[in-house]
Length: 214
Image (cartoon, rainbow, N blue to C red; front, side, top):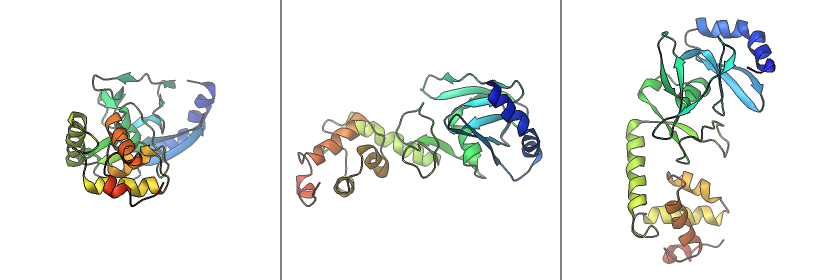
């Protein structure tokens, strides 16, 4: 661990001890370091967890190595609050630290841009990429993504008129394409970019886009 982070851990050791003993206080921001906010959580009390996915082990005072699983998610071998060790998704560790909720065991963590290794948690900021979702929401999004990916004419066949109207609204306000996709609840894939591009160029959904200016 960098010397500065060693000092950070030592300086806040009393606070960290309080977190480990606490009940009903799942989040405690420790400090900022190298433009990243670190926090700890009751779920994984031995770790400093950054909002960009960096993780430090306070027992060894070393940065934890991350791995990429077969599905493209970042994972880490970590010990939980019950003393059991195993492979944990980095996005789940981050959300339990930076956005704790009481029923997190029933929830899943989704990447807004569909990029599974892009672990950034900046609530209320444009670059935020992590949100809590239900299993049903995740399944619905996966099915929608599959329909988009398999569409023969993405400009017209797999998107709804309501999505076209919303896209026109956002384009008329000068919104970036990535945030239009986010607003539609879609991953920022080439198929979705093609849908937005076809509307902006007025090659598709012209009966709707002609009512807007951009």
